[in-house]
Image (cartoon, rainbow, N blue to C red; front, side):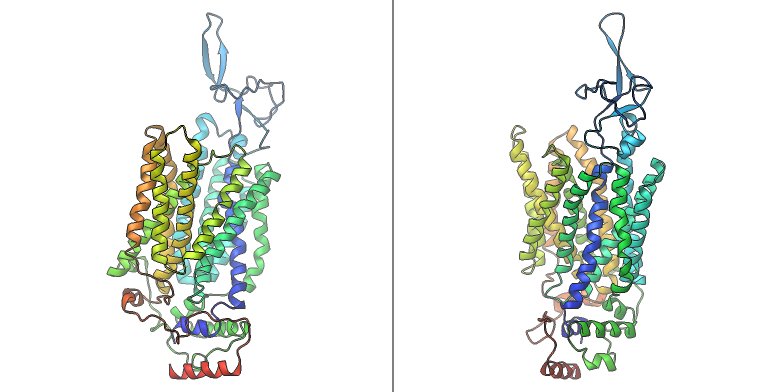
Length: 541
């Protein structure tokens, strides 16, 4: 019996797996908080030069009537307008006494506390880039660690580090320390994302496998929307950072409830531990573990432990082709997702309402994926990429004096890319074999973060050529849609466990109706007849 057959025999999507999904989804809400909180904590409110040291108390203060806060003046934010006595000329003098900030929307942000405006405004963008670099480093570091030390250990480590350093950010004494702490938080976010997703995938049977990605995406979208409400109630950046980080301490009980991946244990020749976990899962699901697995401890993964590295992703021809295509699709998804998000950020004047709507649009995109993904992974991936790319290219044909149509097309493009993003998580986990799954997803996330870093730079090209960003955001997904058609179809197929399984994908037999690889209803306990059938099947294999 291979692992998928054993997993279905003990209940491929029973109570045990459903409880696991609950534990996987809770951290996703906190991840959304950390990913999007800089929209509020790093916001730049309206500001103007303080004309004298006594104009206001503290750099972040604004006393009504003390300074004329005319935010419509172009130079008032970075230069003090000083009238000369001779003639009607004026000269621009850099702010010498700091700035006065409006407190209409925010009580304080990192910008107002450390004066990250005017000549120092680039530091704010640099902090965001370093945070994204942390996501990149974390995807590679924690991905490789999980393949070596196990999904559970690295998941728990990432949650713990994220909580500790997230709270520490709220007490950062200066901007350099703030940036360093945020870098660490970004790295741990990647560790939580990829390990929670893979752990859910490896415990789920073939038929319900896609839920490991889509359900967690719903939880992320929920956190996306909840952040708008939390930020609306807490307008001080330090208190907001503390409010989104401290709940992580409540997850300490994960030490006792989150299981290791039995598939990973078997792939690393730790059979006794794997069988103990499978027996526990069978008990919770009201099933029985086949006797052959309990007594003979058969070679489920077809070989003993073997060391693997990142190079194994491109060492063999089929793996190399698929890995390169997947890396490109990950890159394009994040590039266009963040590129369009930055481009449509001016849809609403209320920042909190805009944040909520951006989270809300994720829900229908994920729902559509749930409906079409069981039919085909390959065509779903290709179709959503093509839809997003075509929407961007259509924007080139719309005049600038039709902003509503442009906004609608931009949202359509974001819808397609969001759906494509949901597919690629599931697709990648199903294509890479167990022995390289975590490493493969980690490297894929590294390419994705490269897209996130480049997206703002590409948007800056709009100042020189408004059409250039749209051409890039339109053509790159279309190329990805074509390349996706060269990937194998993984719907209703067993997960490959070894590199040899992945290389021989096309000649591996499809599961038949008689094979116990499809999910069964595990809401009731196994009857004596079912137990006899399972024992008979085990004895034959």
